Image (cartoon, rainbow, N blue to C red):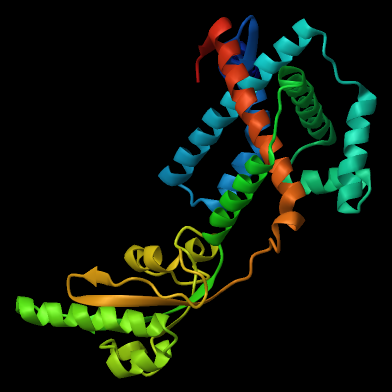
Length: 338
């Protein structure tokens, strides 16, 4: 009798567990967005976000910080998926397709550029981002489709002039400068608290004279040893060592120290050998000199011209893509439920 009761009890437990499964499946497989008539499922979102979630788990400490980062990954990934669903719907209406041969050719080109085989490319993708071969193929197919739609969108309307290319080159150099290590020196003239206006004017006059002398070719290091009030660097001619711009990866990762913003702003616009204007501080006056800077990878405009044209084309296509997607969103029913 007891054995029968145990079997009945076990049967009730199993029945309850089975009865709960559909409810759990509904929770897991909920819809997170609807684009037109197409739903995006939570399981699809999780699959697409997987490589980025792995990066978060590796780089962000567990707890509230990691949870916030993961939440942002889901939001960003869903936004990308919505854009791609809009593109796919527009491609279907336009009769634009991607053939298996086009996907294979893309893989061969990517593998060839990296000097590896397609099989090695898939293995690296799996190790790096957790993507299966099919998921990687789906991603490449989406990229090819997007490229076709953008070409159709802007075909015949891309006009790039020589002035455009030169402007891109100058902008690229300015951006690159914010990432390059440099060596700087300074002269610090202290202004004592409570100094009279006459004493302050005298220090400012000396600072202006030192700028003029340094710009005229006088040895900056010798001037620093003779006049600087900053004891830690005076004996080395005001040498501040190698620094990195505050926003560069080297500074953010702690590989190089950065100067305070007021001094960085004075030294970054300089070319090697140039001397800044006087930087006025509450407790002193500072003169900066850029001693050297890590060489640019862009040797000449002509050598960089091809890359600049490509950057311009990418920029134009990206702007066209954003405008087109904004138009599609206005004409399409969107329901985001994340």
